[in-house]
Image (tube, rainbow, N blue to C red; front, side, top):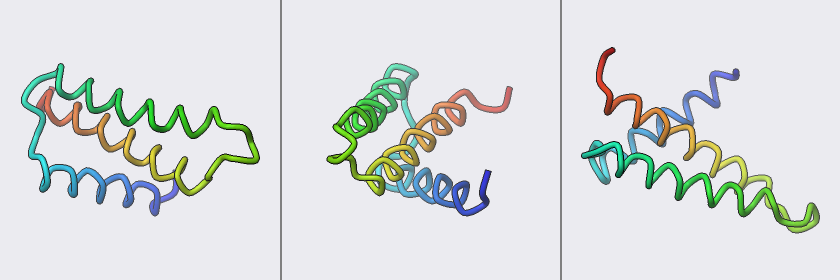
Length: 77
């Protein structure tokens, strides 16, 4: 995995935490992750000529960041 990609995920996670704080429940976490996933899915399932690779990239970064946010919510295990 490219370090640049990991940096983007980390930045997205930090931005989310500053704007919204940590998740308050697993239900909140999965709801946010699902919302981001559905946005990614919607873009991917467009006709190839209509897809926006930048948007796919950005949505995938958000999905990864929200997955990490759920992991953070579980604490050190």
